[in-house]
Amino acid sequence: MSYNNSSNKRLQLVVLGAGGIGKTALVIRYFQNHFVEEYDPTIEDSYRKQCMVDGSQYMLDILDTAGQDDYSAMRDQYIRNGSGFLIIYDICCRSSFEKCPEFFEQIQRVKELDSFPFVLIGNKVDLESQRQVSTVEGNELAKYYNVPFFETSAKNKTNVEECFSELVRCIKRHNQQSKRDEKNKNSDNNENNNGNNKDKKQKLSLKKKLFYSIFCGSNPTD
Ligand SMILES: Nc1nc2c(ncn2[C@@H]2O[C@H](COP(=O)(O)OP(=O)(O)OP(=O)(O)O)[C@@H](O)[C@H]2O)c(=O)[nH]1
Ligand SMILES: [Mg+2]
Image 1 (cartoon, rainbow, N blue to C red):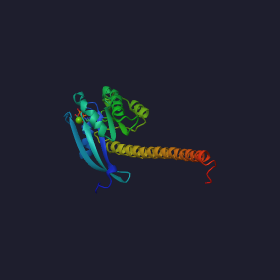
Image 2 (tube, rainbow, N blue to C red):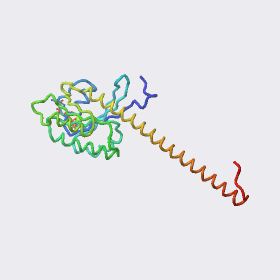
Image 3 (cartoon, protein in one colour):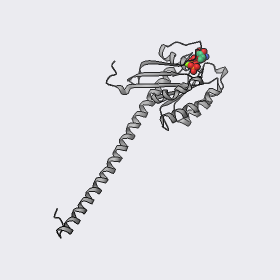
């Protein structure tokens, strides 16, 4: 399928979260449907995939970022180019959960937006016995941001397709809302302009009347 005439369906997704929480494992599970057992810290990797969501086809460009703080300087650039974000923590690592607001605030700052498409993800849900962050806490944080929440397992393939598809829906909704806002802004501007035009016409006709009364001693007959 060609995307030349549907560039709006090309989406840039950015995967963010602390180091070692399973960002790469989730992305590889989604792209290649296998589980990466070993931990090889990422610097930056990108993947491209076509996907079908609600009957529409999309081309996803996914950027898997480094969780290690050594590479955090590159994050602003990734965020700038992203249209949707997966912010991920490890349910067995409390500090990775506590880091999520930092990513959220960084996106807000770089994008200069209060809200943007993102899904919150608690990964490694197969390691239930080592859980440090409850499902309720994850849900509460997602509710606070008003975004979808998933608990996933890259190992067991739990909710992997679902979280990517939901992010695509979030981006679609966000873009539709932005278009509506833009339209409303334009029609407000037009109304203001129409008002201004009326004002201008009234001022011109007053000027005309003044001109005639001064120079002709009478009013125009229009
Ligand atoms: N049990 C279990 N282990 C996982 C899961 N996801 C990832 N892991 C393991 O966690 C370790 C780190 O996973 P990565 O995907 O490399 O972590 P990362 O977030 O990409 O780390 P950085 O690239 O350093 O930011 C690996 O050994 C994975 O096999 C999961 O869902 N369940
Ligand atoms: Mg990685």
